[in-house]
Amino acid sequence: INTPSDSAQKFWIGNAAAHGRYCAVFAQLYVEGIYRGVHVFIVPIRNPDGSVAENVRIADNGSKMGLLGVDNGRLWFDAKRVPRDNLLNRYGDVTPDGKYVSPIKSNTKRFGVMAAPLVGGRVLIAIASCDESFVGLKIAIRYAFQRKQFGPKGSEVPIISYLTHKRRLYPALASTFAYFFSTADLSDKWCSKEKTPEDVNVVHILSAGLKAMAAWNKIYTLQLCRECCGGQGFSSYNKIAQMRIDAEIDTTYEGDNYVLLQQLSRVLLRDAQKGRLSKTDSPYDFNTDKILTKGFLLRALNWRVSYLAEKTKSKITDMASKGEDLTAVWNNCLDLSTQLAKAKVEVHCLERFYHGIESAEESIRAPLLILCQIFGLWCIEQDLAFFVLGEGINRQVAIAIPQTINDLLEEFHPFAWDVVDCVPVPDYLLIAPIAFDYVARHRYGRDLSEIS
Image (cartoon, rainbow, N blue to C red):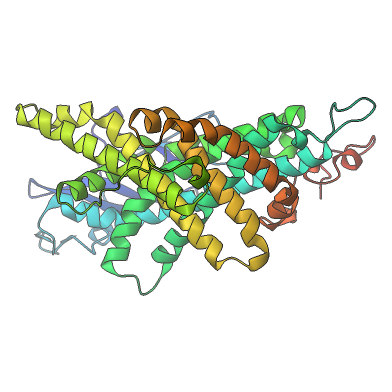
């Protein structure tokens, strides 16, 4: 195992700088001078006494933005020899007499099969993103119900009473539920012992988009929660600030979010090219009395996917027909393809949200439906110019959407405390004084670290 240059060093390796004994190294395999693609080798990097192994160099990654409790290091290998058995050989092996054998002829396809299990990491990041978003929201919403400021003469009202608070926290809660139902379905497919090849393919494609969008939703949500808690949100003891910092890396590891979205959009465009992506007419003829219906919301978001797929496909075809290099063609369409992937994830989340409501207990269905409607309209509101300019919705509907969302926020408000109490995060994991009786927990003489 050899590191030919400093640019080939292994970077950000978890547990490498101080304690790790072995690592799984992805390296380019050459057998008898022939390149056989990337393979994985188990390589000892430290001896049993903890000293650095021969022909291995290790350096610390140094200070970083977050995850300060994680040991990250850099590795170089100087013609480090390992036994032949240290090659993970399910899809490619070297025989005792030095011959390479593999059931998969293509180097690219073989690596794709080897890397497929890493999809599980994307699924886990998407799930964890929802969990951490729920933690932040539970803390912030509980605090907002307790903290009072300003109000009618002689009195004060809880800060959650203000529209600026509802406008930030409740749509974030709605989005997190949408991603929660979607990632739960994805996890069920991934963990099923009876999953079909089609299920594996669906998980591989959707996990790319959901990992990206759920991670971004977490960062956005935690930032809102931090701000909505004011100075208390800046305190490490109240957990949100540290989660916000640690959340940053989710946009990068297990795949850069924008690169992952390209993976999803490529599949969508291929399906569109082969006529497998259904076209959806716009709900332009729907009036304002229909905008809370499932039919309108799903049709609007499905139309956006259909419109973007057709527009991107046409641009690619037009540029390619003029003889332009395919790499340059794809690069010129990255803005559209990214919008397409984001649109697909959002409509998928809305569909899973409706499905989740159907399987939920009767007592929680009404507030979940309001959140589902908030999510659907919020997706449109965030992209309102696109819907109007593309004639996806008419002008009257576009004008009505912001106030309709405000009305839904008021309708949901009486349920908010109980709904955040139901999110899948038990109180003992909150570890934040402001999520409970924050006045009592901040009394004089009490150490802020005593938060149980």
